[in-house]
Image 1 (cartoon, rainbow, N blue to C red):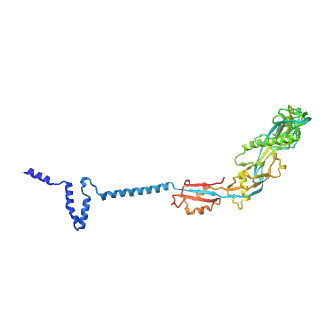
Image 2: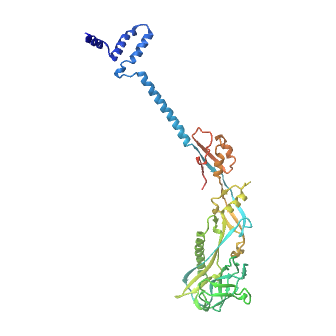
Image 3: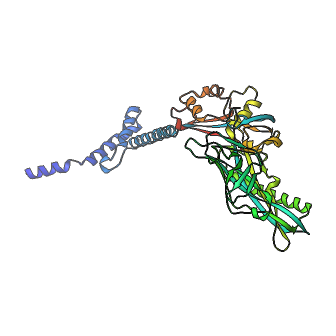
Length: 438
């Protein structure tokens, strides 16, 4: 009897699911009642129905999703701000001040720089020859010619020798210098000074032709300088002749010599140009090829042919580009404030040496010259100083800072991110681009 009672009790106890269902069923009729609170209670209860069966509330499911979206949006915005500051900086594009000013200026320069401008003298020698057809045979006398180096081991003072100074060769023959020369003195280390000069035989004839010789200076004989100042030939001495030989017409002589001069000058100029150091200018009209009549020879050869030979020395005046630029700026810019400028077309100016007919190139100390043209003067901008002046400053101060740089004509500023109102504090984050004209 007791067993049946227990079984009846178990059967009468409903499961949780059934309890909820019954509860819902028992409450649902209340929807039709006028009691609003009861209806609300019914709906909420319905929302939570069958929890044990796996159904989830719709209202509680929406709220977590909205929160996730909000957090994601905030994170993205934060990331964008962080990246914008990570890649923040400033870019400034500058155009320097430029002026084209006509120039017609008389200038002077000295070898030692005492006149403000200085020049360096370049000297290079060479020879050129050509064989041409000769004319009728005539009695001709020619003097042998060559080149010597005169050395000064006597003192540190320069020694001057006039044109036609007599030299006695080790072959016993007398030769003469072709022009006036100044032999530099010894260096402090005791190295003899030397100078190159052409020579010619005292008389015509093949007997003066010779292999390289040593020479004594006749005028120094019986003095202490005689053994200390001497000469040595540079190459052979050639061209001496006496007798019949084919004659070249005056017209052929002039044309051939002119051709050889142009060839020799081009050859020597190329050698000089290849050796010009950076920062120096050699104007095309600042070079001069010096060829004396004694440096031109006509030597007969076989088959009625004549060899025309010329020897010459090219002199050129090298000018320091930076110093010349500064001098031009001082002379032609109104109220020049010593700003750093450069002239990209400075080599296109026209150089003209004053009184060049009377210039002794071998020992020139000072020159006067004229420069004409229209130099393009471009102001340089001190980029490092400009960046330093911008660090940490307000964007609104930019125009005021520019007033301290008269070398700047225009400026375009871009700051990243666009909402920043100050310049970066680190110089490497400020990019300055200067559009210098070519």
